[in-house]
Image (cartoon, rainbow, N blue to C red; front, side, top):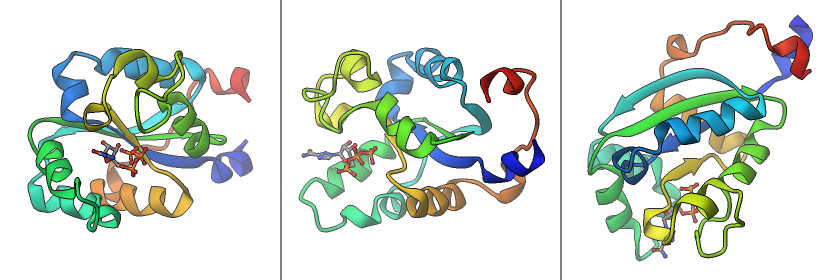
Length: 155
Ligand code: RTP
């Protein structure tokens, strides 16, 4: 079990200000929990605009960059790290396509959002971004290692 725990991947997930303001936190958390992923870090923060620009630095040349950073820093964001086999890719699947008009029903954005600028949630898009985003939002000591009782029934 220890050997497997070392292999379990982690991803950064954030509920954006629209998701928090709309009271969708518990709905979204429960989807990740029920799937069998494990929460290893969580905090509610209002990021500064500079911090939002760091988080979205890959998009700095896009026309919507400024508005996107204003939006991310406009209110509380629920920042989280989730752990589990395949969590980076499958987390994106739970979230659904970037544009909620194209997200499948059953996904978080498909069920709960309407437009791309208010798509309620962010998830790392690969192992490198996951590592970088976790390091940007959390200190190593914020990441909690523990064994949940359910694990032996999930793996
Ligand atoms: P995220 O990083 O938030 O999970 O979204 P993503 O990878 O699915 O999409 P990405 O292309 O990285 O875009 C990041 C966020 O920028 C906003 N966006 N607005 N045309 C627009 O106005 C537009 N396009 C993208 C969205 O909030 C998207 O999640």
